[in-house]
Amino acid sequence: MARTPIPLIDPYARLVKDLRISITDRCNFRCTYCMPEEGMKWIGREELLSFEELARIASVCVERYAFDAIRITGGEPLVRAHVVRLIEMLAVLGVDLAMTTNGVKLPEVAHDLARAGLSRVNISLDSLRRETFLALTRRDELDRVLAGIDAAIEAGLKPVKINAVVMRSINDDEIVDLARFARDKGVGMRFIEFMPLDADSMWSHDKVVPAREILDRINDVFPLKTVAIPGSGHTQPAERFEYADGNGDVGVIASVTEPFCDNCDRVRITAEGKFRTCLFALNEFDLRAELRTGAGLDAPDLDDRLATVIVSAVGTKWAGHRIGQVNFIRPDRSMSQIGG
Image (cartoon, rainbow, N blue to C red; front, top):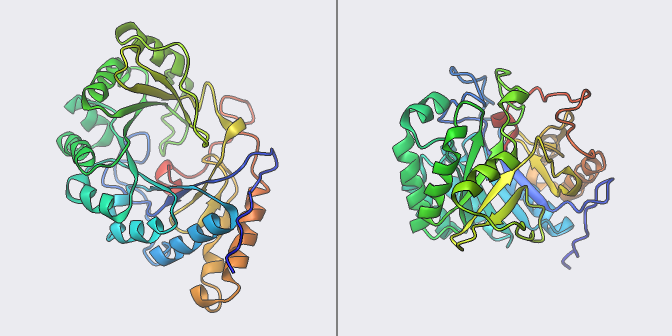
């Protein structure tokens, strides 16, 4: 008999139902705010969770606790071989299935991902200027990313959204250009405040461009409606505003200046199977140990043990990340090691 899912509630009465799954810490970019130019010490391939292991965790979250959204992240998820097969395995769960990618490999796989069951995609694009893009990513791949955006649109992934991390004196002069680009393409645009998750400690508060400033700059050129678009059933990290002319909308993710922690509904799994309750969490919970104990995936009590770890972890979810406060502690892992 099928088990009736039960709500998973954290200590602050927030319903947890959004799962972020990192499938690799590797990336074909070396973004300055994410990792050093030479890369990092990568997780050994035998330490990565297999697709079967990832699907097992996801099924416990969906079937026991009514999770209704899964996002695949990295590193860069499309550098992992045969990722389309994972999408097929997760699609049968019937949830909103999304991916965050730098877009470089989308020209080859966008249609396959869509056919496999991927619903939507977020594509990172911090600059439209070749020289700035190269300086930020340390890769001359702007044309490939732009082609990836086109491929995602052609494949019918919907919505397609562009993510841009905004940094003072680096790319903040492109805010309007990026908004115009997204409007012309008919895709969503999301501007993200620069967060303290870099590998080489380049973050400082004076490099953060506040969300309100971003919106003001856009509004000066493309007037926005004054009331934010109401959220869906999920906590939306982006506060979204429609353009007054009806040509789409723009969102800002104000993780630093206006954090949405009070309504956060997400948890994360790292590529090697650590369960995290926040991007900035200082504690992790080991799911891989449960997956690989004794009979492994064939163990009759595996789902119960995974559920125990997940429930225990959610029971420690904190009120918020405390960025900007004196007691903020930066995680000792970079974004690519945690999963966006």
